[in-house]
Length: 249
Length: 327
Ligand SMILES: Nc1ncnc2c1ncn2[C@@H]1O[C@H](COP(=O)(O)OP(=O)(O)OP(=O)(O)O)[C@@H](O)[C@H]1O
Ligand SMILES: [Mg+2]
Image 1 (cartoon, rainbow over the protein chains, first blue to last red):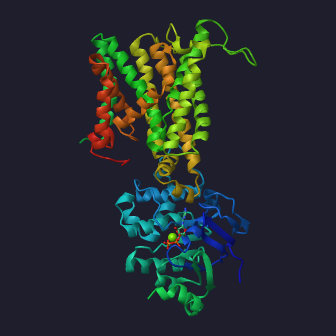
Image 2 (tube, rainbow over the protein chains, first blue to last red):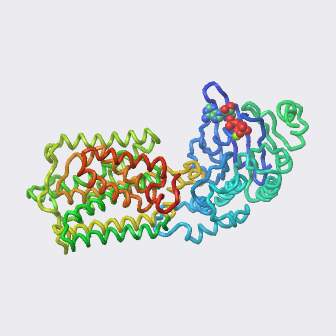
Image 3 (tube, chains in turn green, cyan):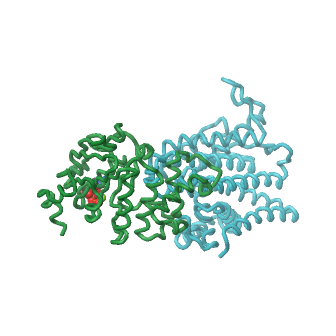
C-alpha cells in the first residue's frame, strides 16, 4: 500500500459540550477516492474544515505530504497543494465566472501583487482559468455573472476553481448536492477520471455516486468513524447498515 | 440611462469647463469652490479604494486627511518661521515646496494606515468601524493639545506653498495641480481595479474564505488596500490645507471621516467616479443650502436616506441604470 498523502491523526473537535469529531483518523492515498459518508450533523464538514485549516482541532494532528500542517493557515495549506470545494458554494457572486476562475489561477501563480495589467488580459492566468472552465463545461457561461448562474452551474464552478490550483489532493464537501440526476452522473464520470491526477477525499450524500466512485469508504456517525473499508465491506457491515444505511432506503 | 464611461467623461469635462468659465467670467470664488470639490473628491477617491473595493468601512479616514494637512502645516510653518523642524539625529528643515510636502504627506499617511490597518483589520464589521473611529479621535485630541502647532486654534500658513514653474497663488493654477492629481489617482485606480491585485481584493471583500482557499491571504490584500487608500487621502489632506492655508484639529474630526463616507454613498460605492459626483453634490449643497440655513445637513441627511433606500448604487448607479457592483 502506498504512502498516504493526507492523514488525520486522532483529531477531536469540541464545540462547547458538543463533540463534533472524536478521535478521527483517516488517510488519503495516491490515486484513490476516499469517500466519507454519514448522516446530517455527523461532523463531516467539521472534519473537512480542520483538514483545510478553517477550524483548529481541539486535539490531534493533520499531516499533508509528510508534514504536520496542524498549525498551518488555510492559505498556506492551499499553496501546499490542498484543493477544497465547499458544501455551500463560496464564490464571488458579483464577479463573472471567468473572474472567479482567474482568481484561482492567480492563487496558483502566487503573485497577486501586480497592479498594472488587467488580470483578464494575462495570458497564463487566462489559459489556466479557461481550461479549468472547459473541463467542467462552463466555458460558454464564462462571462455570466456568478449570481446569475443556476445552482448546478455554481457547483461546477466550485470544482473548476479547485482545478485551477492543480492541487496534490482534492477535498470536496458534497460536490453533487443539488445537482440533479443528470448533473450527478456527469460529475461522477468527471471525478472518476480526476482521481488519476490527484486523490480525492469526497464527502457525499449521493450513495449512487459514492458506490460508483469510492475506492474506500469511511462512515462517520456522531463524530466517530465507525467503519472504514471497500464498498463491499461497507455495504455488508452490520453496524453501518444499522447506523446509517438502514435509514437510507 | 447613460453609459458609465460617458458619464465619467462628462464629469471630467465639467471639472475642466466650469473653472475655465469662472476664469473667463472673473468669478474666482467659483474656482475656489471647484478646487474644494476636486480635493474632497480626491480624499474620497482614496477612501473608495478601502471602502468600495476592499469593503473596509473606515470611520477613521480623517486620520490620513489630517496627517496630510498637518504634514503641510508643520513643514510650511517651520519654513515660514525659519526654524528647523528637528536638529537631532539629523537637521530637518521646513519646506514650502509642494512636491516635497506631497511625498511626505503620502509617506506619513501610508505609514499611519499600515499601523492602524494591522491593528484594526483583526476585527470586522461594527468593531472595525469603532476601532478606526477611536484612532481618529486619538489624533483629534492629540492635535488639540499639541500647543507647539497651535493646539485647538490650528495653524495658519501665510503664503501658499510653491510648485516649480507655477504660480500657485493664482487660483486656476492651483486648481490645475489639484485636478491633475485627481486625474492621475483616478486613472491609477481604474488600472488597480482590473489588475490581479484588484481582482483578488474584490473577491476578498465578497468572500474571504474563497480567497484563502486559493492560497491568498485576504488580510494582506486588505492591508495594502488600506495603506494605498490612506496615502491618497493623505495627499488630499495636504492639498486641502494648502487651499485654506490653514490646518486645525477639525481635519481629524469624526465628522470629516463621516463626510467622506457620505460623499461616496451619494456618488456610488465602489464606482470610479462616485467620489467625484458625491463631492460635487456635497459642495453644491453646502454652498447653496448652507447659505440659506445653518441646518443644511438635514437636507444632506434626507438625500442620503433617499439614496440608501432607493438607489443603492448611488447617483452613478442611478444615472447609469446599474446597481452593481455592490448590491
Ligand atoms: N461553528 C460551530 N459551532 C458550534 N457547533 C457547530 C459548529 N459547526 C458545526 N457545529 C455542529 O457540529 C455538528 C457537526 O456539523 P457538520 O456541519 O460538521 O455536519 P455534517 O456532517 O457536515 O452535516 P451535513 O451532512 O448536514 O452537512 C453539528 O451538530 C453542528 O450543529
Ligand atoms: Mg456538511
